[in-house]
Length: 244
Image (cartoon, rainbow, N blue to C red; front, side, top):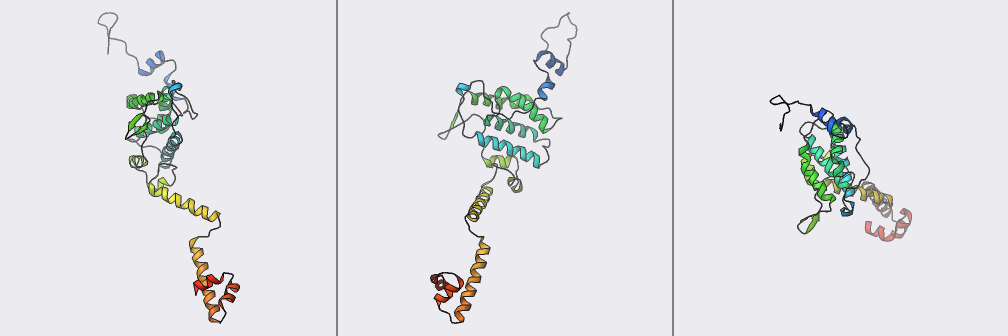
């Protein structure tokens, strides 16, 4: 909007956006874009009001899951870039790896990472920025008797549906998984624990038991007593009785 033009009715001078940024900002736009994504833990401006959040590790792992998803899919197609941008930044903020003061730098680096040719609208992240400021100020949102941070803390089902994550993709993720995948992993861990404690797989156990029954029945048919059979096959007499 033109407020005043020097020289009467002369047309106002017009500048390109990049030229205006270079003239007014302390650093150039290109310097901002070249800034690498920070991975270290940083503090907000109001450190005295910040509260520790037990889900920081979870937020960081979810961020890495989204990065893995991008890798598995060979990048981010048009229509998905802002969704990824929003959730990547949300989990960065929630994990403590960045703060509201650094958020815009992270957004520039992330946009370049998702698609070097993509130009996003800054205002689409304004709500996330306000939530980040509230989070750093120590604010909490109460819902159903529980308190939550102002930033987004979605359940796995929401992320699975939002990003349309398949069962095969879940197997390569760490935290964004369904209950079925969680049960599958729990079963694998239990099987590994049993093997470590000397347990044998069920198919091998059944094969061994079948062979033992065959030996016991054969020796009994030859006229051996239960005590002698037990001694010969290396089991207790009670076990022989159970088989017979």
